[in-house]
Amino acid sequence: MEYPAAFALLAALDNAEGEVFARVRGTYAPHLNKTRGLPVALIRSVIRHGSGADLMKAAARNPHERVTAEVFADARPAVAVLRFLRHCGSHDELSYLRPMAEVTALLDRHLGADPRAWSRLLALLPNGRGTVAETIEEAGAGSGGREAIPAPPAAIAVEWRQLLLSARPEHLVALIPHLRPRTLLDLAHFGAALPVEVVAETVRRATARQRRTLAAAEYPRAEVFDALIELGDPGLNAVVYANSRVGDRERNLIMAAAGTVPPDPTTVARVIRSDNVRYRRPAVWSGDPTLVRAALLRVRYSSVVVAKAVEAWERGGIAALRPLFYNRYENKQHEPFVPPVQRGVLLGALLGLWNRHGPAEAERLIDDLPLRPGVAAKLRAMCADGDAGRARMREECRQAFDKRTRHVVLREPMGFRAGAPGYPPTGWPLLLAAHAEEPLAGATARTLSAFPGCPAEILAAAEDGTVLRAIWPVRDRWCAKTGHDHVYTHEARRLRAELAKIPGLADQVFSGLVPAGKALDVYDRIQRYGADASLVDNHRERMPAYLREYLGEGIEARVVAARLAPSFAGTLPELLATAAAAAG
Image 1 (cartoon, rainbow, N blue to C red):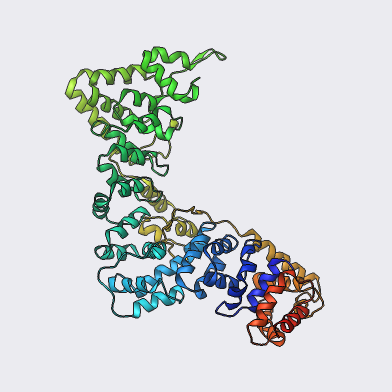
Image 2 (spheres, rainbow, N blue to C red):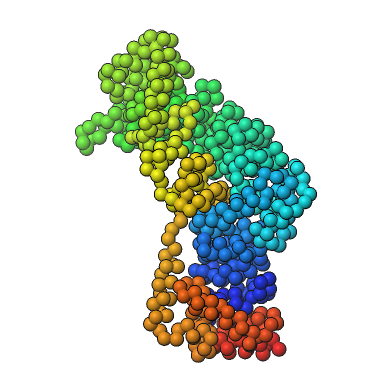
């Protein structure tokens, strides 16, 4: 028979302790990924007795909240269940977020912000044999524990982080004085909502290697990158700048400080040699003539790469650059540079050049840009007015960005955004304004609730009051989408049609008239996709009695039956009778 049918028999043969699977694991484990879905009872046995690779195979084929809800309720031990949920989250977000929302509720109900209760939970995790709920309840009801929560053993460090990240933000903040510095650094690395001053102190106390790891991490919050940039280390700034998860705001801050913290040579090379506007664009704030030109280069119409265009400008200025932007097929001359659409960005670029190189360099940029005559004349007048003109330019820049924070345009031509250094991110305020104008759909609000810093107004709009406040606790890939389970829908429809058109199909399971593989396939599909609850319950109750009739209560005959199943070609009664005879 095929392995999907053999898995259905193995799940029925096994007991609550998973002893049968433990005995035949070598036969079945390599094939766990050969079926779209596994019986929940078998998944529980895999969690209890399987290896890390077994958990990954089982999760890859069962990433659905229906499955993880049942697994979370009954599977043990807690540490392996948490690992299984993480593997499921790599394929489907709600299969992870739903159970973790229950974890948040359990932690809130039983542990709260009590450091002694949390230290008891840490002591229970390595050797605990209960479910996640039982382990948390035991920790909450116990006595003893320590005020200073120790660092977790390496074997459960990820699961401990997973639980801390699932705690309510106010409880996590209350636990901060009781956590070790290494634990706080770990939480900051994976995006925990920690106070700014705690993040700054954690970064200050970190070693050089730990700081570089933080700078290259995927999930830290903006406060972590701000604290790293505040240290004024060019090498560290280079790692932050190169991080693909860092946005305009952090790169703008690094470039705006170029006068006091010169960019690392690798950062300069990245700006000058990259066709990626995300790396070039922030250099407009740098005050460096070459980097500003690289940021404003009109790459679309260039006949050479960015590095060659910048080299030509350095060699001969705008006159040497223009021939590289001439389209001989259209007989058209394109301007080498594009002026920022946002006036505040233009003024900020001029101020940076003025502050570092004087007004002459700012005027040179005005000459290079294709500005309207009136705008260019006004800017030149400011440059000619000395310090008074610079003060006026600085005030107009501030006013331009204050105005834009009230009327934010999400994206500008050429990729420029309202992300001036020193201005806060505008993501949540935009969503709040949209929510106030037209309330977000419940499902949308519930998905947004999984993101750090989600405002209370959006949390309250979650579809059924269930808030998914979970942060991804590992470096592996996170699946930030939930697709429709087309396989389940198709299989449920197919089973319903077959039961209606094929008389006696459901009775074939126990008839002994069809091959064992076909009988077990029908049984498995009814258990997983059956819409008739009475039929599902009837088969589930009959199967244990049917197996006992042939195999009795002993474990040996069940193990033999499980080993024979994948290669057996007879009927189900023949398989069970053969196993009973072989076991003696």
